[in-house]
Length: 255
Image (cartoon, rainbow, N blue to C red; front, side, top):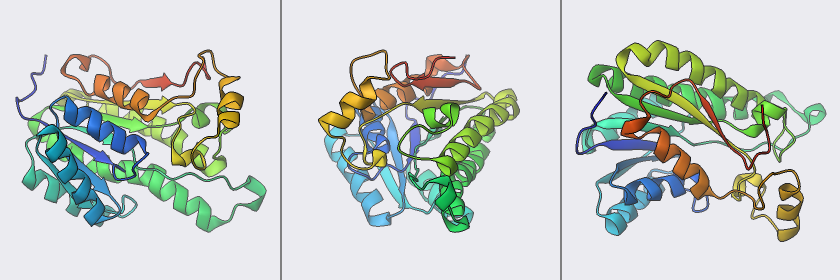
């Protein structure tokens, strides 16, 4: 059993958007005593979110701007966070972009944009943070996939998004296998329909009703639902769970 240090940090990517999963996760974890490292595209916005977390929850927090699709940018941001925070114990790779372009209208620029952010970005951040976790022989990594990967789209986003999110599941399993000997777990959370801007803006009641018709529960998901799943998987007691994909999707996709 790995015992967590009393002061421990989680890095969350994509945590600056007001209505996003990353922001909800940052608040949820800060409220439960985690020090938080915020990575988002905008350095000032990342630092503002960190300051807000410290003010509201009394935890240490620090923000650093990075384009997750650029490895040098990612490494510099993680270096900055590590220098300003307690030991990095956990990572939540939440940063992502949507892509509603139909396949027959898809060009290579859109394909590259989505794959670079949603898959390469997860790899670049994980690769850098893994160095620290392996050195400390302690770590919890959670990646965000999507029900879209498992069902082949059928959500707001289409093919490149589904491909990237399927890649995240493969990355999760493979890295879990390689980092297991160093006491680092790697898991994925696969959200179903969540009321965030990545679904094309705030969901109307009519759109929510349409989505709920496919679920076994009676509501669309919220960012808090995903934050709670991440909180569980990065916990001290989740050390025997690795290489798994946890579907938090209202029962939309059942194996």
